[in-house]
Image: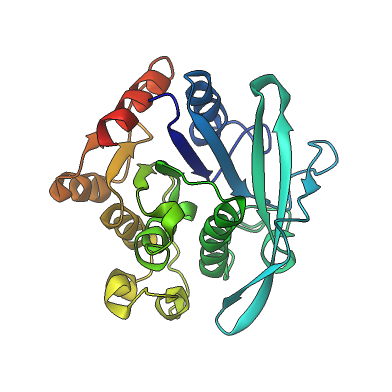
Length: 267
């Protein structure tokens, strides 16, 4: 299975963000999988706290320039790229002036969640899939990490399901201990609708919160990975109830091999 192609979509990747369980997996998993002979592409949001000069980000003009319409407003999609030399891997960044210029990720300096986190998640999910289309790269597996990637499974299965590049892609979702308390904007459910995503598909978002965006992601995934050793107990119970293939939490020494074997099993 040497030619397997894996698309990694991550909420956090170190060194662009501080080290954490999720950002370390975002950094070392793609490298480990690439070293096993698989082809990879890696995406993350271009938060305003990422120093572009120090990390040598530059815009990919041929991929940028598309507009995504969210809630009747045009938002230009800007794609940047940087290289992690030691890993011989590139990271693509999804950027937009309205959504990703602020100096924090999801909360301001007082710990208050940004009101537009819902639109930022929509923009990021659609932006990644549109960019992969432009790259004409057909992933066998799409592996998402963290709640901010939680709309990717929905869009992949419902809005991009007729897209030949994604027709055979398997969706894997990693659940982490990344809960937040604040509900999203009540209009979230309406804003998510796009190309083949029906009101029925987003019923769960009647109450737009962490639990329900996680459940929505799990519903539209082919398999689930426990990314943290402890996750929200309600989510854990929900995962078991779906009867989907599940990989339990793996420690830092074993996870690359375990994830690689898990990919092979679900293909």
